[in-house]
Image (cartoon, protein in one colour):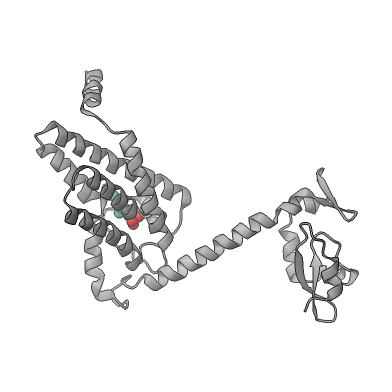
Length: 284
Ligand SMILES: CC(C)=CCC/C(C)=C/COP(=O)(O)O
């Protein structure tokens, strides 16, 4: 229970109660902006928790220097101390989100191997995985480009190829920067991977599924039932990544987000036949 005395001493502006035990074993609240009572100061020397806290103090404070100070109740404290609350709040929120993500992803990884609870569905999930892999998409787009005899068809297929390559590059860069490891329950048995594919953030299948779905809906698939099928396919590709244990939920969620925006970039960079002809003209 907080002692009424300590409660009344915590100032209103920016002072946050800190929970510590007093010499009598009872919990007392003290303000971070005020000097703790002598019996608590004495305990700081031996207590391992406070030793850890001291170790994580800012270098300025440890050195006892710091030109910019704020005065609270006659006490000189470095200004940075008053700003530590925000990062720690964000830090706590992020680690909670991460913990939920890991827990949920582990629970949903029901096809991670044959003897998992839904192990019998694994072959179907792997089929969905192949449907969103880069190789069939690149090969399919290149084949259609080769077979297309209309300028409009060639334009669409060439831009699809460009979009697929752009997706591989952007996902590779983000994976290499973030370097988040794949879930521990994942079995790394995917075919044709790049070295960055040992990392899981973001899911390359999810970015490709989101981007290709938007591409197909905008340029190739007009019939309503087929449009629904395209959306279902993209959702299944994303969901199957978590079921297979390849990814955490946040990898797939961010992958969908990134793929959605990648399509906007493709529209901006769209290669028109006129542009292509002038590019070819410059080459000659
Ligand atoms: C070899 C080519 C052309 C593409 C690699 C595609 C691939 C294996 C991506 C990894 O996807 P996830 O990040 O969803 O696991």
